[in-house]
Image 1 (cartoon, rainbow, N blue to C red):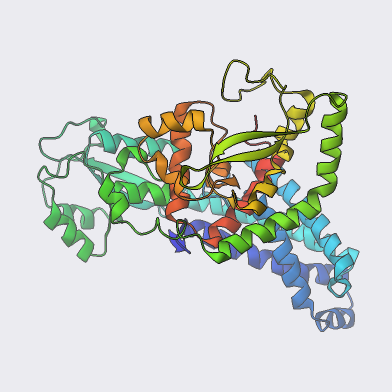
Image 2: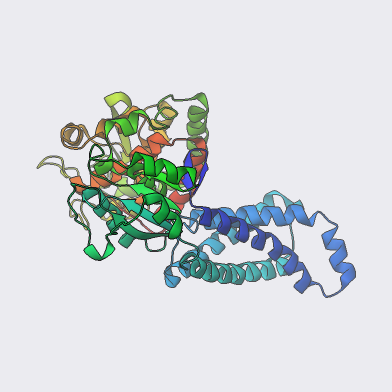
Length: 464
């Protein structure tokens, strides 16, 4: 794992980005090679600032692939899904490159070169990903992990192992502590006849995860310190989950994990750069999306023959639990909540025909940009919730109030990592991602979220 501006990125993703950046850059030179058989013509093209044009091609195409979620924490191992995202990513990239040529004519490469470059980039990336996924799943590449503990917390690690078979780690075994219940399958429990240090060195352990339920019961502090001195990483359960999954594991968190851990201050201290970022992004999107918003408003107005409102305002909980009125395009019938507040469901009968489309495409969210400009919201942050739900969550879900130490957002880490929540358990799962965002906030993480929000819109991920 590599930590970039407090955000954990798997080293495998870093290497994949570097490799495919080189492939995208080189594909322009390959395009020149195929397009011009005459060496003199090739020299003339190369001498005309080709590297700047190749760099522009790389940045645009790389950004498109990132927006399609092709550099997510969990690599897409399903070949069909990968191909769909590659096709869409290259399609968007080609459109953006064409648009860039009209704005900056000096970047123009020629249709022939662009065609060969796109074909070369497409197939080279398919080959690189096929090879990379095989390498990632090989035993030689994976981190060998020893888990200290065999109780409830150890079961959480085992559950994660089943969910993340391609996340670059291998659980060697679980070492039970004295006087603790063994809840792990006995075949995976280690019977230690030597010290933890000797066992770790003999079995090539790269990392030790502390997953004991009660550290007060004969905690092997001396052995673990020796392991650390031998170059073996020793991590607590919260840190392990944070690095592997991109969320904070609520069931493993205790107050000291929050108090003494790094983070939880940068997002709370709302900086001028964050506010400038919000205003700049919101203004740009409002300008670009204004034709869509006008058409949407007209369609909603005409669908009810002007009887029902185009927009609706609803009270949400904002920064420091202060209520504010969120603004959205109306996507439900006007009597949608005659029976009280409730979650939106799949194929919700309260949603209008136009509302179904604008909710799937997230167009209904666009008026919230005015909330961002006003200062009630940030562009990126936890999803704003209703007071009717929040009061109960604060009582029943640990640390839920921490998400209100930052402004709510139109998009966020939880929105791109977890599908739409329609139950309290979903809310708890999404909170784990919200807390990761609050803990590890940076503008870099905001940019990462914005890039990946595009795939949520295009593929309708989590829409209701």
